[in-house]
Length: 544
Ligand code: ARG
Image (tube, rainbow, N blue to C red; front, side, top):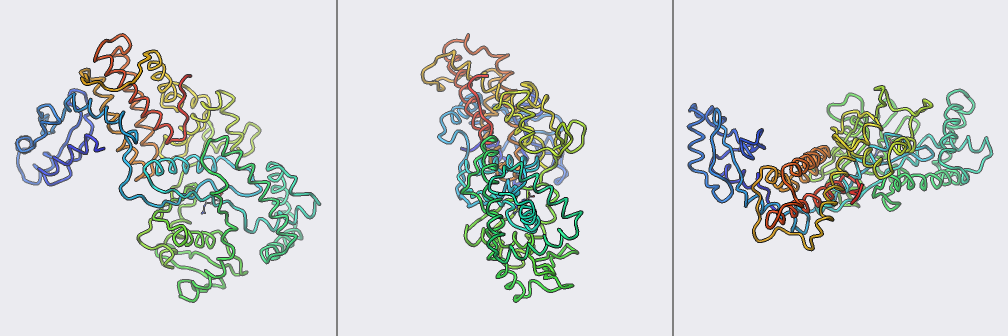
């Protein structure tokens, strides 16, 4: 389905030969869309802009779409869509089997690396953001027809297991019987010992090599820690209502066997060179190299990521790879992508993007803490929101605040404000959906569709229809830019237009074709609100 601005854009482009930069009109009296193309061309051609605009209008044939064109102010061209064209666009959304979304003509295989909590540690607020954001990308790209392959790169390997295993052995506990919060406490005791006790630290370091060398006892404890962590992660996913399952797990340990082979290849090909005892890949723009093998022979986070990206291209056949982590890892990813390109693991035809997000702040402007002052876990944050609202509303509140600001920005976790049903919040959109559902229930209309005669004469009806026709473009834009706030902003505008429509246009009390058209407009809006919320991972209740 081609959107109205896209149709106009194509015609105007054919006449002017340049990008017309179609924009929504800034005021209702300017119509629905506006282009400044005449002003730009006039500057180039050194002619009066209104004269250039008149020339364009003269040559442009859009009679089938628009009311007679107007030239405004210094030379803007204003477009007002004909009401039957708007009615048709709204009808098309309602009748579209894809609900107004445009499936892509070339589906891609898209790997999304998200969530990725660490074994034996509680998920923290940062993991809340990656889980919600990654899940939204998953939903949007899937809806467009791409094949999404989620990869949950959990931290289930690495040097922290040296100290964890030593601590388990010292305390003589059964790691398989721990809950995740007990494991988290164990982690903290181990870390404290590691800092304060020389002898423990030495043993913990030695344990890393023993464990990674395949020692049975160490591996048994490691496996137990992994196994008790997974159900806790799944419980968090269930509470959050996200799509991740055990099938998506591809933790760091998955790549162990690849590491020595990969590193050797890099050394042989000369992509990696020894520098001060460590094996390094130097990439342009970074003074410090990417270390693929440490001086002690160990492999770290970066080496594992190189192995992972290689498999994602080679075995998972990815066309696009998206990583969602906090913004502080931006440097790691840009360097890792460059090293992967240099090594030939990441061919030019495959795109790799890191989406970094900001921190979750408390109302005091500092990193969010629980009431007792400890760093907030994901669970405690959900609890805080559920104290002030029902679970599905609390969740909508959290997800919407997470997605509705630019991702890079820090966001303030203010439970009281987030759950309000007024203002730019998730519950406000849920409420808009519930209210329109109620109207449709009351109408008890059998089969709601725009009848033979659709009347959309009121500006508020037209505005609503216009917005509905832009849904597909908005979703495309989110898939392209990976900026969910554009969809949030769109849905907020739609809910606002719906409210203005109720104010100006009685629905249930109107009659005949007008009533049928208004009901159909309500049905189309409900459908788009529900689909849009679904893409954000937010539930759209019938009643509230
Ligand atoms: N486990 C890491 C963390 O908690 C995130 C891993 C992100 N993914 C990756 N491929 N490096 O920060």
